[in-house]
Length: 541
Image 1 (cartoon, rainbow, N blue to C red):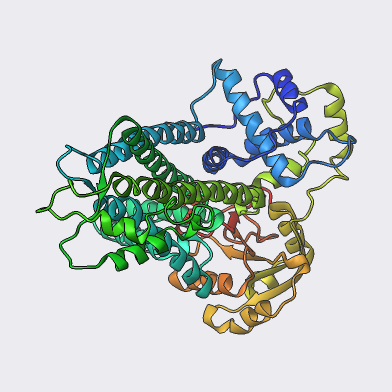
Image 2 (cartoon, rainbow, N blue to C red; image 1 turned 180 degrees about the horizontal axis):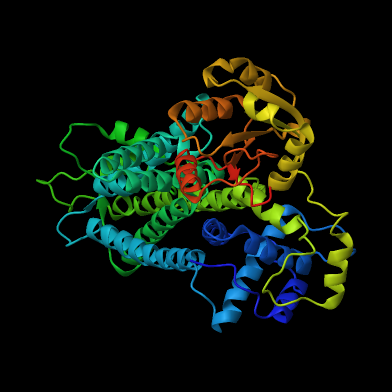
């Protein structure tokens, strides 16, 4: 676990900021980002604000042009966090993302070696020749070519099925859904044996898994797909290399035989179908055996090979090698390259709009109060002066300019519109456009949900803020209301909860107790909604 310790080497941080930021996100970076964001959830908000504001001023000093875009801003924040920890320990820290990347690279080399050895071993066993009878190509074609043709056909059918049923991601496919269903059943079965407190933590952990699945989709599965294609590619390269080596170094005779009584004409037609991808370049007799060569290479055990012509017996090996190339090597290579391209596109499309990133950006862009004392090493004096000068004028850029606030009608009568608008701005960086009361019975608020469902949001950035009393436990009715609200909002619509304590004499924005906070945090995490965020008022509102 990390904590918001001081930036021990601000000079080194400024040097890092001046370097060109990495232009691409990698999956290991996302894992490190989630690691740091999860660790920050357990830390004091004031210290986090001080640390992240200091990092922001190092990245985008006031008066030196517009700040970088969100994805660049978060990427620089991540690099500075890594550098700060390295400066404290004197050596790079082993992070989960680094461990994932190193393990993935090792796995690639392992599958490449294992695939090549297994492919070469299978091909050599199928090409075993003792000079008594020809090598039976039937086994070779079925195991090394036919099965891969079946794989390509199944892949094509699956692609058409996803297009037909609009299942555009692997996580929505049959196998992804099956794995997720089994995990959910396992969580339910295990939670029955746990105490109530540990059961909540277990549900919260599974909720985190669900949330990352909805944010990143199949992004974390793509490297596994690449590894599987690398295994298939190396397997086929090993089989092709062993076949060519056997052909060059030994005098092989190829033939065909089967217990099923089929004629040479049917075999010829099957061979022509398999050879379609290269038949335009290499005609019959060169790219695949002719009908006459197939008839003359049929193995009849009682007759032996004495009456078979050498030209007919060697006519099969180009067909076998081209079959491996067209159905084994090229498709695997194409699938691996396509998956890598999809991974890069998916990484490039990430907008980091989940609630945890919103909280981070809000801390970075919100100026510190002049009375705030921190233990962080100071940045240059000119930055401190600029910070004081813009503390009043500068504010965070609103994440949503037309947010809607929902709160119990009893709370609405005890607070002013200005107080509610200021609370939305301070805690979530929202521009509040509308405020709607909720009755005590949440199921009676269907008209509010219908209103939000028909609402036209500015730039499609839907955002709803609920103000809820945290001393009231999160009952199933309220959680069901949150799910209904999620269902009527557009994709990636934001839901923010401002959880307040018991109303005071002059304000409803009082801090809840620590126990109430823990209860609500666990229940909200169990929902697995990455676009659901919560905040708590501090002492003094």
